[in-house]
Length: 437
Image (cartoon, helix red, strand yellow):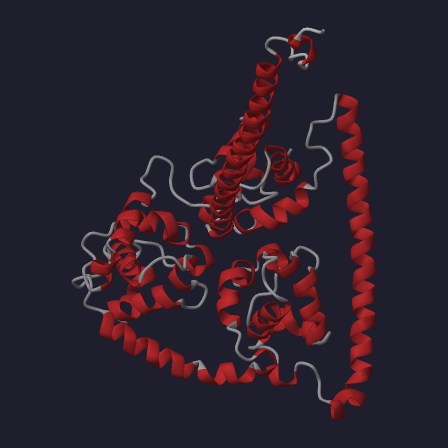
């Protein structure tokens, strides 16, 4: 008879059940750990995405602020440019606007904004302290002078071309400007008089606004004062002066559409849209209407249909003359190009070309430097005037490069355009000094 123990099933080897149990537990722990890690990673990803979005918003705001800020500041080397005063004036704008101008540094604002014209007489500005130049002006009273400073007058743009200045800051700067030639009233007391002057000036400009029917709603005068005035009030770079009928005679014969086209796309020394690509075509047209208003009837600038036949012959004549002038200009440009190529060849034979040799310095000069170096504004030496350049040329081209890049006296660094590279500034400097080298 068999033993009872022989009928029993054979047991698992010792420890086998324990090993299987442990393996199952390890699998469970691994799965749960994987889910926990994936949850943490997802949370970190969401947090990082939110941070990146906020950083992008900040970057976009900084980029917008960078595009909107003024391209440069003008001050005399060694003097306070008034930045601290402007900041304190902005922080206390409430008290300043309510009538207190005592905390605003008028001298600092003057040095930063007004000095370029009122220390040199540029564009007919009366020089500070010149009693003869101010004699007729001071008789109009401080309130009128303040109104002109705030709203613009003749060649002077509104707020000196800086729209960020408050009325109180303009009052302080105007007080400093006229202080040597008249008794300045207590600051903050001219608000009512200035308001009356403003109302009267608005009435007088009503008729002119009615003439600009084609661009109604756009302030062409304001755009002109900001963008076009520097050349068209001084004749810089051969620009026809506003109101000079003789200079405009041949141009107005070409018709307003041609003038629009030249203003929008550029012509000769005039850059496209006056050098401000942010202007729309309609804004440029509105400024052109204001520019030609004294010498051309804005309501008939496009030409009436019933007059088209009688004016066709005149227009064809003007077109023929324009074509002849254009051919002459092209021939002259070709000669200049050949001369420049000769000069470039000579320079190349003397040694290796500089890094900025292929950059169009003339175009940069026309966009950035011409306003001062064609008129002598702020004491800038005029291009081609050998006497004004003689002492400067003795310093050497590297010194002139350094002054152009980093600023010198009243000239701001890179001509007030920080977006220019050093090589672009050097190319513009080469073109500037080319006639006197």
